[in-house]
Length: 404
Image (cartoon, rainbow, N blue to C red; front, side, top):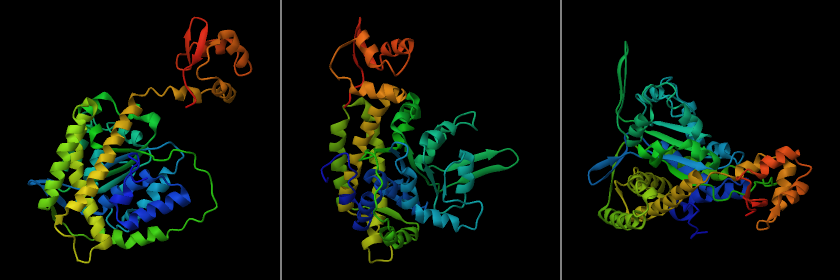
């Protein structure tokens, strides 16, 4: 699996304790490799102080990650969030301050500002359905909130002014998004203006590695591997505010990789604008990986200030993965999802349709006999003329949706 470009490189990029946990949950509970890997990265970022920064060429970045896993409904999305975000959830439940939260499943921009004030960790959105949150994003704002959230992703201070209340400022904001969506929702989720204003490019997309049906098994699910990670998460949680930098060799390694990476993709208009965002994500992900590595192997009281070239190499493996996944996300969006029309038909119709040859040409009379017990004649005539179901020329028809 190591050379599979559709698989998140967790075995090469993550410390052993994390990869062991990912493999265990996939083997016992069929939690997807990519889904787990991306969620773990977001969760670790959420544990870091909102004042932690990584500097490259004097420019600071915060470990702010916005991820979206593309995964069908009913495929254990909630189970992934529950098992791999448990540490943060428990810390949130322990909070005594009512005006602070470390995580949420929904909130307005104004609420994010309010609950980020004096919040030393920031806020993590856990979203089963990203499109629901995006649709409601502008419900309480006449001017729209996507532009504001773009600034939140940038790590810029957040400011809210209210009559009679005054000005609320959050200097060190950190909003993490760990979300899911379904393939058929991508087109609705991201409109053309979301690419024009940069909102779409701020997400790290990943499709599931294994989309096959999850059958029940008799394996006993244990949380021992997750428990092994609890002291690791505790160490990450306790890292005090500090500034990280790339070592000289790490900076040289990253510059060389990025320029070669850009040369490979800059010719594609649909991918060109994503390249600079991935450069930024490289700094942020390197910071998170650096802390994950220290928490599992470090003997010092705090992580080293310098991020190593080895960590950068592991970071670039992850960035390569996310570029491929972004391209696949665009395919989902551009695909008109004609296959969905077949799923909307009666089961009898679907069964007959799937038994049709992918290449054979049928006359209307032949189709009418084959589908005779599925719908009435008038309904069938309408369906035969539906170009999402059949290609037709005169009285000759072929399937529009193949069985592949």
